[in-house]
Image 1: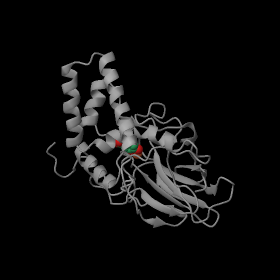
Image 2: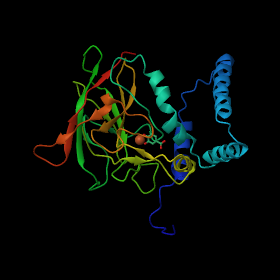
Image 3: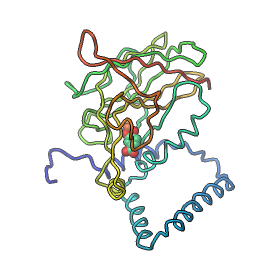
Length: 284
Ligand code: DHB
Ligand code: FE
């Protein structure tokens, strides 16, 4: 592609940005490594790989294909993308197993902290005439015991109508479709945005190669990302999807849960669609 006016979103560019974001906020405890735990996990992981090699009689040609692919994942900076698509959902399942409140799901590689702080009734930052169906997303944040949580914060980020995330694809305003909404004194919020499009993970890098080689598709259903928190309560990281949307039933990242599917209705006296969704937070 020789067009210099419209820089394309590439696996390498979004991978590099995702790697940088990830490194800036590791959840790993730097205090020390539990040798026994590392021994157990890595030994079992390798044993599972050895078992697959033996059962399927993996050849040297296949071993070399794997080795060069793994090298390419690193060179393309695609480890965050690969891991968040194919592994994170299992980690989230374990992390959220004992939660009673709203369901969570994967964070994905495109969260950026410290987005603009906005009042309870707000539009997310967006371009003039931002493409896509207008969406009014409203609801309340409450505790598992039913108490409203005034001052809860709802961080929201999502792709635009072309499936692109600000700060990870070129040409978008820095905080496009990203904001931190502070709920009102009853825990309520009314957020205006546009419906995101389904998201295709980058196909021009190592992850795309794997998808092609395995005959899979590269799509996630359209989704809103959220982090909801309130004092004395556990932060929840989640996503919301749209009923009937493409790939809701075959998300490449296996992150859809039935409780996370919205069914917006047309706004009676205006443009676009609206939907109400309440968040229930577990106590810390
Ligand atoms: C990926 C992208 C997403 O938007 C998401 O929510 C999860 C994973 C990815 O490209 O890895
Ligand atoms: Fe996403």
